[in-house]
Image (tube, rainbow, N blue to C red; front, top):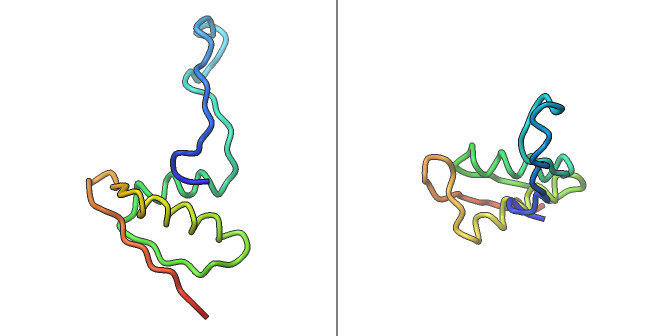
Length: 83
């Protein structure tokens, strides 16, 4: 799972009169959405890999490894804590 893992499909063309909020529909869990926003709105992240936050750290680390840049065009920084 990573920043590009949001599963999407195009909205049907004839929904303009029946759907209040048009766009691309998709499904994702909460951690995927956190990674999506976090990689775009931050300059860096530090994580201690435990339970639910582990997937968020993995997604952020993958974005760093792939050279992803935030909305300001800056490369992301990553640090993983150890016990």
